[in-house]
Image 1 (cartoon, rainbow, N blue to C red):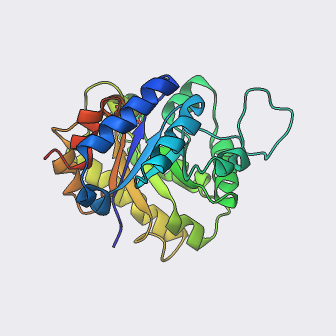
Image 2 (tube, rainbow, N blue to C red):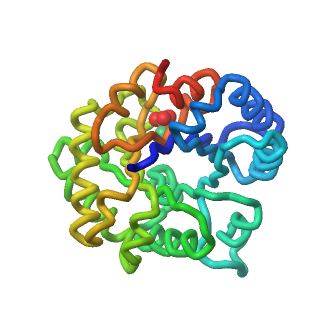
Image 3 (cartoon, rainbow, N blue to C red):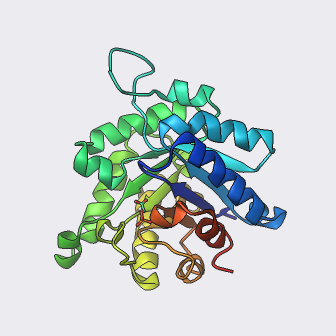
Length: 254
Ligand code: PGA
């Protein structure tokens, strides 16, 4: 019932020419059945959005364009920022919100995440809302408290059907870019907990909201993650920069 969604988060990598080469490389490696099984999303830096969009459109590829961040206002004196309206006009369909790197390095708060989610939804963008605990929080056994609080604050004030339509990415911070992956059991357990948290606040939305796992996803571990009943896809950083690795992940390692 929930269509898996596998998203490439390129972070601050690739010039626009490299981005175009990636899309061409990915196209050459995927078959039509790969696009049917999984919703594929590519989130380049802002500078490559236009190039990726024209390459996707030119070849009529079923790849959705995503951005890595958004401001909550439509326009204004906010030097350096980009709005959901601007992204919508560029045919962007997804936007990552609240990634741990933005929370850690750019002071993004739960309140800002909530405003960004609302603005994204108002402009027909599907937010990919990132949540996850630090190593210290996992060791202190406060993972559930942390992700519950992040989920509740990020989704505060939304309608049930809006929550049902969005994507949540569970990304334990200690697993991002470290080569350490949460075990499939731990990932499943926390993602099932997030689903219960959503259902408790927004009855009916829990069974619809898609929840990804993120943190050192690779061709070698995607299959076991995707076989978990509550894991609906992956948010992939490092391994999404190479078209060969990313195509293998889209195909669950096969
Ligand atoms: P990683 O990053 O796959 O390199 O661990 C995931 C992410 O930050 O979204």
